[in-house]
Length: 155
Image (cartoon, rainbow, N blue to C red):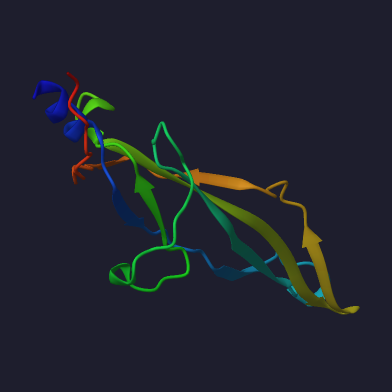
Protein backbone atom coordinates (compact mmCIF):
# COMPACT_ATOMS: atom_id res chain seq x y z
CA UNK A 1 0.00 0.00 0.00
CA UNK A 2 2.85 2.46 0.79
CA UNK A 3 4.30 1.88 -2.67
CA UNK A 4 0.93 2.66 -4.27
CA UNK A 5 0.50 5.94 -2.29
CA UNK A 6 4.03 7.17 -3.00
CA UNK A 7 3.50 6.57 -6.72
CA UNK A 8 0.29 8.57 -6.58
CA UNK A 9 1.99 11.45 -4.77
CA UNK A 10 4.96 11.79 -7.13
CA UNK A 11 3.07 12.06 -10.42
CA UNK A 12 1.20 15.06 -11.80
CA UNK A 13 -0.37 16.15 -15.03
CA UNK A 14 -1.26 19.78 -14.76
CA UNK A 15 -1.00 22.53 -17.34
CA UNK A 16 -0.46 26.10 -16.11
CA UNK A 17 -0.86 29.29 -18.20
CA UNK A 18 1.61 32.20 -18.09
CA UNK A 19 1.73 35.62 -19.76
CA UNK A 20 4.04 38.66 -20.10
CA UNK A 21 3.72 42.29 -21.27
CA UNK A 22 5.21 44.09 -24.25
CA UNK A 23 6.86 47.51 -24.65
CA UNK A 24 6.36 50.37 -27.11
CA UNK A 25 7.66 53.74 -28.37
CA UNK A 26 8.85 56.88 -26.57
CA UNK A 27 9.86 60.29 -27.88
CA UNK A 28 10.74 63.71 -26.59
CA UNK A 29 11.89 67.10 -27.91
CA UNK A 30 14.86 68.88 -26.43
CA UNK A 31 16.08 72.40 -27.16
CA UNK A 32 19.76 72.93 -27.88
CA UNK A 33 21.66 75.94 -26.55
CA UNK A 34 21.05 79.30 -28.29
CA UNK A 35 23.66 79.84 -30.97
CA UNK A 36 24.51 82.27 -33.75
CA UNK A 37 23.04 85.71 -34.34
CA UNK A 38 19.60 86.24 -32.89
CA UNK A 39 20.00 83.46 -30.29
CA UNK A 40 18.23 80.80 -32.31
CA UNK A 41 18.17 77.27 -30.95
CA UNK A 42 17.89 73.92 -32.69
CA UNK A 43 15.29 71.55 -31.30
CA UNK A 44 16.10 67.86 -31.36
CA UNK A 45 13.48 65.12 -31.32
CA UNK A 46 14.80 61.86 -29.97
CA UNK A 47 12.73 58.77 -30.79
CA UNK A 48 13.51 55.65 -28.76
CA UNK A 49 11.90 52.40 -29.88
CA UNK A 50 11.73 49.50 -27.46
CA UNK A 51 10.67 46.45 -29.41
CA UNK A 52 9.63 43.20 -27.82
CA UNK A 53 11.53 40.30 -29.45
CA UNK A 54 10.56 37.16 -27.51
CA UNK A 55 9.95 35.63 -24.11
CA UNK A 56 12.12 32.76 -22.96
CA UNK A 57 10.49 30.77 -20.14
CA UNK A 58 12.13 28.90 -17.28
CA UNK A 59 9.39 26.69 -15.80
CA UNK A 60 11.77 25.15 -13.21
CA UNK A 61 10.70 21.69 -14.36
CA UNK A 62 13.46 19.04 -14.07
CA UNK A 63 11.76 16.87 -16.70
CA UNK A 64 11.04 19.32 -19.50
CA UNK A 65 11.01 23.12 -19.93
CA UNK A 66 9.04 23.22 -23.19
CA UNK A 67 5.98 25.33 -23.87
CA UNK A 68 2.51 23.88 -24.55
CA UNK A 69 -0.49 25.36 -26.28
CA UNK A 70 -2.63 27.12 -23.65
CA UNK A 71 -6.08 25.82 -22.81
CA UNK A 72 -9.04 27.91 -24.06
CA UNK A 73 -9.82 28.86 -20.42
CA UNK A 74 -6.56 30.87 -20.33
CA UNK A 75 -7.95 33.38 -22.84
CA UNK A 76 -6.13 34.92 -25.79
CA UNK A 77 -3.00 37.07 -25.44
CA UNK A 78 0.04 37.67 -27.68
CA UNK A 79 2.55 36.42 -25.11
CA UNK A 80 0.43 33.65 -23.64
CA UNK A 81 1.97 30.24 -23.14
CA UNK A 82 1.47 27.15 -21.02
CA UNK A 83 3.55 24.34 -19.57
CA UNK A 84 2.53 20.81 -18.66
CA UNK A 85 4.20 19.59 -15.47
CA UNK A 86 4.83 15.86 -15.08
CA UNK A 87 5.52 15.90 -11.36
CA UNK A 88 3.91 17.67 -8.43
CA UNK A 89 5.91 20.49 -6.92
CA UNK A 90 6.15 19.39 -3.29
CA UNK A 91 9.69 17.98 -3.52
CA UNK A 92 11.22 20.66 -5.79
CA UNK A 93 11.98 23.45 -3.27
CA UNK A 94 11.45 23.96 0.48
CA UNK A 95 8.32 26.06 -0.24
CA UNK A 96 6.88 23.12 -2.27
CA UNK A 97 6.50 25.26 -5.39
CA UNK A 98 8.06 25.51 -8.84
CA UNK A 99 9.74 28.90 -9.41
CA UNK A 100 8.72 30.20 -12.86
CA UNK A 101 10.79 32.98 -14.46
CA UNK A 102 10.11 34.85 -17.71
CA UNK A 103 13.14 36.23 -19.55
CA UNK A 104 11.79 39.00 -21.82
CA UNK A 105 14.08 39.98 -24.71
CA UNK A 106 13.91 43.53 -26.13
CA UNK A 107 15.74 45.42 -28.88
CA UNK A 108 16.26 49.14 -28.27
CA UNK A 109 16.99 51.62 -31.04
CA UNK A 110 17.15 55.41 -31.11
CA UNK A 111 16.91 58.10 -33.79
CA UNK A 112 17.36 61.86 -33.63
CA UNK A 113 15.55 64.36 -35.87
CA UNK A 114 16.30 68.09 -36.08
CA UNK A 115 15.76 71.03 -38.39
CA UNK A 116 18.31 73.78 -38.89
CA UNK A 117 19.17 76.28 -41.62
CA UNK A 118 20.49 73.41 -43.77
CA UNK A 119 17.22 71.48 -43.67
CA UNK A 120 15.74 68.43 -41.92
CA UNK A 121 18.19 65.89 -40.50
CA UNK A 122 17.68 62.30 -39.38
CA UNK A 123 20.42 60.23 -37.75
CA UNK A 124 20.50 56.85 -36.04
CA UNK A 125 21.90 56.94 -32.52
CA UNK A 126 24.08 53.94 -31.62
CA UNK A 127 22.74 52.29 -28.47
CA UNK A 128 24.68 49.00 -28.23
CA UNK A 129 21.45 47.52 -26.87
CA UNK A 130 20.62 44.82 -29.39
CA UNK A 131 19.44 42.23 -26.86
CA UNK A 132 18.25 43.55 -23.52
CA UNK A 133 16.98 40.80 -21.22
CA UNK A 134 14.61 41.65 -18.39
CA UNK A 135 13.92 38.74 -16.06
CA UNK A 136 10.93 38.62 -13.76
CA UNK A 137 11.18 37.66 -10.12
CA UNK A 138 10.59 33.92 -9.65
CA UNK A 139 6.86 33.26 -9.35
CA UNK A 140 6.02 30.36 -7.04
CA UNK A 141 3.57 27.95 -8.66
CA UNK A 142 2.00 25.05 -6.79
CA UNK A 143 1.36 21.92 -8.86
CA UNK A 144 -0.67 19.33 -7.01
CA UNK A 145 -3.17 17.67 -9.33
CA UNK A 146 -2.66 13.93 -9.10
CA UNK A 147 -3.45 11.25 -11.67
CA UNK A 148 -3.82 7.64 -10.63
CA UNK A 149 -1.09 5.30 -11.80
CA UNK A 150 -2.11 1.65 -11.97
CA UNK A 151 0.38 -0.60 -10.24
CA UNK A 152 0.38 -4.37 -10.57
CA UNK A 153 0.72 -5.93 -7.10
CA UNK A 154 3.88 -7.98 -6.58
CA UNK A 155 3.62 -11.47 -5.06
